[in-house]
Length: 358
Ligand SMILES: Cc1ncc(COP(=O)(O)O)c(C=O)c1O
Image (cartoon, rainbow, N blue to C red; front, side):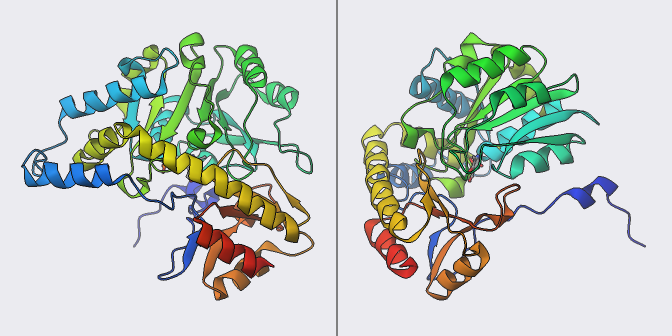
């Protein structure tokens, strides 16, 4: 006899990551085509060889503190190391926040289409996601008034991805302020800035200004460390004790901590990555615009295209036959079946995807 799993799991979809096929060009998960800084690799190897990274012991608190300190200086915006919490990717930080705020029957507001993990985490925690449709057909901006009026006594979290995955747009500062001030102490506004480095702007300064704002950032995208799983949150100080209670102990491993510190100490490499992505993003958009009805402006390292009347499943399958993997957006709630998302790659990769699409 099998022990029944929680009934509510029936409503949760498995997370579908971008596909990985050996030898194919993978432009489906918004990773960094340059990889991490060579300084990061050198540092990890050096520390391992010198016995500074003892893999038989749990991650050292002092190293974690050093990373939090470096992060607070990097993000600025008035934050201090006590505002910084770490997790196994932004995913890990979001999971902890969902478990802090969502009790059975609580609600979370999610403007869609967006990163699908938000709704899963809310459901897993026993909560109910409420969706607010972004202004599709226009620029996918958030209908702020609708969002605010959807906020009720049960609403505990509001997830705003900025730049938003998969649409690529940021929320303007005046709009996020309106949301934060309207929901005040009722709901925590979680701003997911996984792609902030490519946008060149951040809302992190709002964390020290308001008590109901948390900003998520990651080493997976601009720093090219997705495989190490290290992300962080900038959160108000009053929330850190709850965070420490709920987060898994040692969720960021020793190698990831060292790597993240080394990555922050190589700002020239970060600049190079961001410049390449911005340059190539323009090239990719220009080429996609030759083929598709609408290609949306993007502040991230990916581009969204409306490929109607074609169907995303068909186009993605055709590209796959040619060894190129892009994201079929039909798995994003509210996106429909005619959008694809293409990660900005190297010039060679972008040329290949453009040729294949043409
Ligand atoms: C908006 C958004 N947030 C978070 C993540 C996950 O980031 P991490 O690798 O830090 O868990 C992604 C990954 O694609 C994303 O698109």
